[in-house]
Image 1: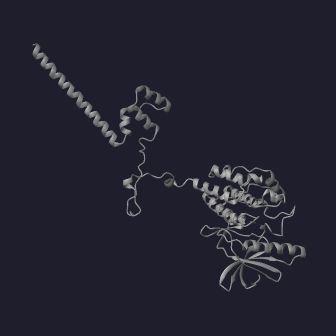
Image 2: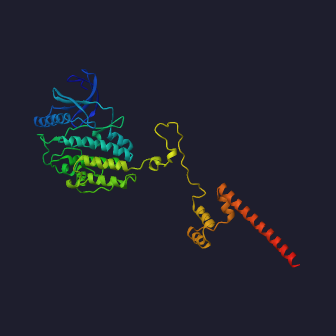
Image 3: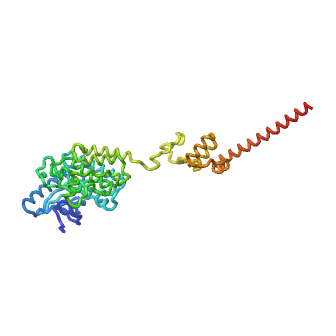
Length: 388
């Protein structure tokens, strides 16, 4: 492993990038950790010119971009046959590694990540820069959940001299747009298609276009219509199915025309996701019991649920037996396939307060009958006295 690149002190190797080795290094001038991406220029002259042109193109393109969701470029240089770009060192993980571990992420987390990627792409597109290699390994998830796009190594500026020639494919086959597969010139809508592929994978655990080899994948990309993500993941809302379908439209005019449109729809979808039970079904509190901003010690209001004594078919039948006509009770009995309950069963199942009221009613009714009997006897005695 090399120990020095320009003024940068190489600490360790981070891995292989799209065009060379990526190192972790230190900038001694300001004592800052950086990531350095390199490209070996010891190639045949024709290849060297092409790769070097693409490499400096990345530096020029990415160096113009200053956005929270795009990795920051600090410096560019060359040491012997090695050209390099120094950029911010990110403390996080590639989205590819996260997906390899968890396969399918929660829908809300997927939306948060893709919205941030789309925001970064929207900014780049506004500056006439197309990434052309949007995929999980080029997305970094920082520890606080922040997202950054990396590797604008095959980005194409509108005025760039290096262009894709017919039959020359740049990008990763699984995430390429139909126009990339055909070797056509691309614009921002190609990035949107690639992001749609990534979104589909994050929701379902697999990319939408699958094949045994590159040619099979390309054929699928050009001809196959993937099933809605909700078929594989029931947690995906219908609105997100439509968003994915529009992002993956093969017809450029049917696809999202810019990333900001995609961001707006993704945000609307996120807002429409159901919250937890409390926020999805908030308890409306009386005005007198609503805690004001300064009442930190106010006691929480307890939501009163329905007693299980009333929450069943049997409870409905008991209520009907106490309140409805005989014909209605019989009809309900047939519908629910339950026998008409007796008063004993009703009192036994009812809450204590209801049962107590029923007993009190029975007692009061019994006392009323006794009073009527006494009055009748007195009247009969008076009549007998008058007659005789």
